[in-house]
Length: 331
Ligand code: A2P
Image (cartoon, rainbow, N blue to C red; front, top):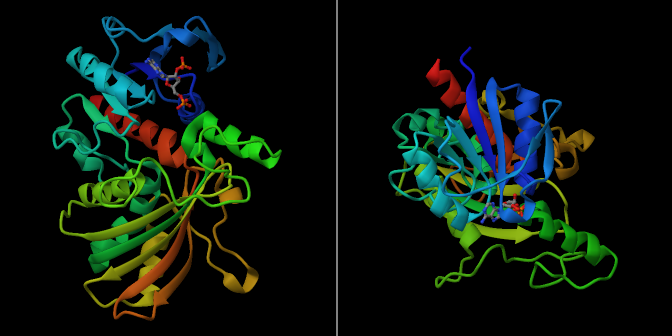
């Protein structure tokens, strides 16, 4: 197998460190490996595959050396500036920020859902929002079979989605300290506010779920609405998803469709209190689905409960899976 030169940009961050862990676990064929971050962490040592690597400052010259794939998780402004520089040098960037997701020239990819979109990349591939990724793994097989008409998302999102600072706000809040990252205390609280508010009264996180769902499922007309909520949970996002279909469906067929879907684990045995839980999903790569029941208020509707580790499948694992697809296309 051809080995690749791979860089992780934002390697010292929460998602960046998980990139290293997932790359190691999945044993990607890497020849030369580079870790990059801001000047603040230049010189810091990170261990990868039993070897120590020195963090380099990301600069305009970072991609002068031959790098095939760069996994970016260093914020939108860093991606805006440096992803085009990397791409111009022939590197393919898999970008975890929101910067390029809605650019019509940039594919937005969940490998279980729309791997074919990777083919039309021009040097940048966007990794979707964490809440969108797990929803797509659940909804794509249902859309294919029963044609989705409308989706209502209600999310219960972990503080790790807000990076190290979000995590610390919950830790400190549980000790009675005031929040620094969130606008209100997150400990013992639920904040219906993720990312900034937009003119239409939605938050940007909610709009990301709406826009990205349509782009990934290739349906600009799909009716989608969302309420995204930060909850006092360290890891894993939980989502209540209400779906209305164009077509009638058989419940058994719907459950077997989800059971056979790639990346999905069904946990649905309510008699024994079995359903997906944030605590159990943490550290895993699969998307867990349960509480599957007909929405009795409409003709063709279903309610599902979808849980996944937001840092792994919601960010790092998804990006590494994209890198794997790129590598197999190079063979
Ligand atoms: P650094 O540690 O040097 O600040 P998180 O989202 O968990 O806070 O992580 C953000 C990641 O993005 C970190 O690795 C951080 O590096 C990196 N980063 C932030 N700003 C820049 C920048 N201007 N150039 C390169 N890396 C950056």
